[in-house]
Amino acid sequence: MRTRLFIPGPVDVSPEVLQKMVTPMIGHRTNDSSVLQKGIHDKMQKLFYTENRIMLSTSSGSGFMEGAIRSCAKKKAAVFSIGAFGDRWYKMAVANNIPADKFSVEPGQPTLAADVEKALATGDYDVVTVTHNETSVGIQNPVEEIAEVVKKYTDVIWLVDAVSSAAGAKIEVDKLGIDVLITSTQKALGLPPGLAICSFSEKAYERAKTVENRGLYFDMVEIYETIEKKNHQYPSTPALSLMYALDYQLDQIMLEGIENRFARHTEMAKFVRAWAKKHFELLADEKYCSNTLTTIKNTRDISVKDLNKRLAMRGYAISNGYGSLKEKTFRIAHMADTTIQQVKALLVEIEDILGL
Ligand SMILES: *Cc1c(COP(=O)(O)O)cnc(C)c1O
Image 1 (cartoon, rainbow, N blue to C red):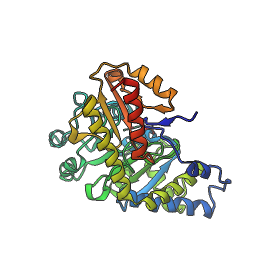
Image 2 (image 1 turned 120 degrees about the horizontal axis):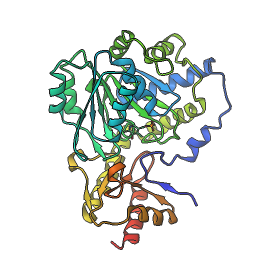
Image 3 (image 1 turned 45 degrees about the vertical axis):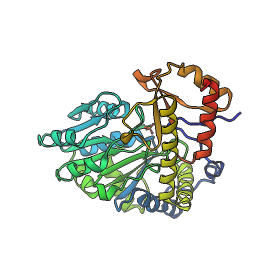
Image 4 (image 1 turned 60 degrees about the vertical axis):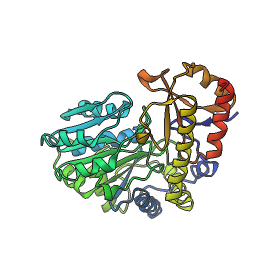
């Protein structure tokens, strides 16, 4: 039996998208390759509301997170963490010998603009990183408010992890002034894992050029320049099969309508939140709750592990809490091509299992 995934990645992928992965190979230095990659570039710009260059990487999203912080931080990075993925960015800085300070909060709290202001006002930092949607706690940070702060610090490069929200929540890169917005294919985009995607501003490029020891595979300058010099081709051989799938899926997203897609995600999120409040509690203040997944407090002291086992027998998978929140919370993802009907069907099964 096929399991329907309500976990925050990998997500269910439509058979049509999967079918694109078996497209016959082409040379990665051919014109066909350039056409494919330019098509993806232009469509991703629309999805991200940006004129910035779009770059792909044959890695998961973490590859570009590491590449971006390593290529852009010259002085010191201010890493704002509200959970596991914010922490990961800090670990990447440390592992690469990049001076960085981590600013953390209690689990369930967002990154506040006032805290970003306080850090940047010291003048110590030339990079700031923010997690748009922290998957470990189901929080979407108030990037519009944070943007107002970051805009005042023109020497600071702003890196945003939107791995679990891009294509499931509206993020207007140019309006917000985000220098680097990073995502992966296996979350709200609705593709198999294996590609990272980012938008990269000219300002970030100008900075990165002055940074030494950017590494090689994730050297953002090398990738940025190769795209220009070689007509949208990449320094090394990219995952062309995934690119075929991505190009097709972006067409499907445009057919649905970008705004309609975000609205569908919002409708699912609202439904799950209302259900969670009826039977449990939300981990976060509702105003910061994610558009793509909901983290629910286990106020009934159920066995999350057992619930997931019984759901598996019925062909469904949800997620337990992350790290220390493992049994204290559980998470329901509602992203990518998932429909409100599928979400409702899942919740009926959970009610039945728990006798709610
Ligand atoms: C999944 C996730 C990541 C890691 O992405 P990979 O593609 O697995 O490397 C980073 N940040 C957030 C917020 C995520 O949800």
